[in-house]
Image 1 (cartoon, rainbow, N blue to C red):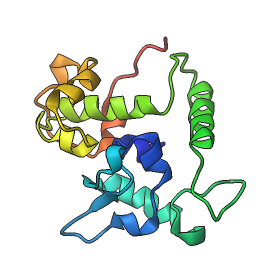
Image 2 (image 1 turned 120 degrees about the vertical axis):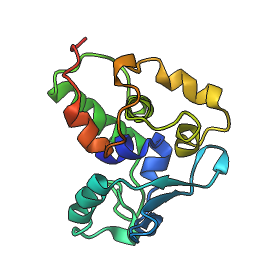
Image 3 (image 1 turned 180 degrees about the vertical axis):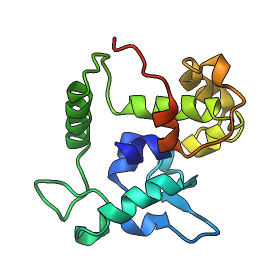
Image 4 (image 1 turned 45 degrees about the vertical axis):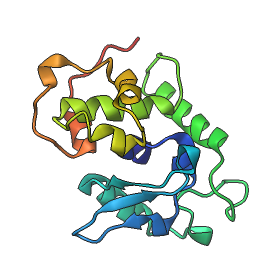
Length: 167
């Protein structure tokens, strides 16, 4: 879930991640999204806090290089239905009653990037949108008092937010 949120990935992009898509060189620090919507290829910045979590996760074996392999067949990528079930389980365990799926993490990523001071023209590139107007649909929850803040690591940004009402 941290990966989906911190990178702002679509569910299909998350499931298609392979180890070789992670570029951890200090001068690049990015993830190649090769299975984007419309078969588009893009690079997404790899936040340092996510990299640290992935380094721990990558110590386990990953058949055929999938970052997230299917539970039923480790030779295949994670099924989107399984990823959704994991999300719903985590959401329910956290006591969050709002409906929706893993795609809501993408909305949160876009909103939190804007609140952290990332400019509105960089966010569509991060998310793989052609137009800013497409990205604008994701930003309806942005808190105006948070705009203009310094850019922070996405996972650290979550911990700095006040607890939202559970509805």
